[in-house]
Each structure stands twice: as C-alpha cells, then as structure tokens.
Image (cartoon, rainbow, N blue to C red; front, side):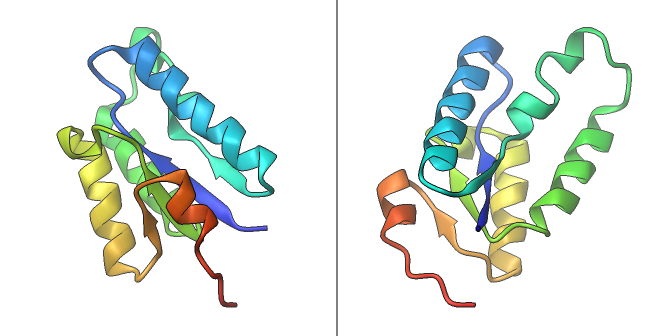
Length: 110
C-alpha cells in the first residue's frame, strides 16, 4: 500500500478546509491507499494546544519524508505550509499530484 500525504490550506475557513481534506482522505482509503491527513491529525488544535506552529510544520515535513506521494488540494498555493510540503516533495523526487485522477493514473515503480 502506498502512503499519500494530503496537502492543502488549513487556515481561513478551517472547518471547510478540514472537511475537504477529510473527503480526499476517504477517497484515498477507499481506493486502497493509506491517507496521511494532517488536517485531521491536529484538527482545531489552535483552540487548545499551545505548541508553537513551527512544531506542527516541522513534524509534518518529517511525516511527509516517509510517504510515497503527495496530493495537493485546491488552493494549496495560498498555504505557506502546503507550499513548503510541495517543495520538499519535489526535492525528494516524490510524485506530486494535483488531482485524484492524476494519482489514480500514476504507474508506481518499486
């Protein structure tokens, strides 16, 4: 099974952004992938977790390093975190997808 990291905006309309990321996670799981969805892992932590933001960002970059690919959700370019994640994936030579169809059409080599 391939692990796919979901990157997209979190801030702004947080509940809507979490819901969009969750929807993609469900689609990935249903198609046999392992979905790594940061939006769900730390959902609404800004309300009750006082860890500095960079702790989350660095932690997610570390998790991304362990993935097989990344899918970028609509609006990702407006997200500082998603831009950093996409940049790291590119540096690692990791497949970067802009749609579910693109991901599903990818031929994986091991």
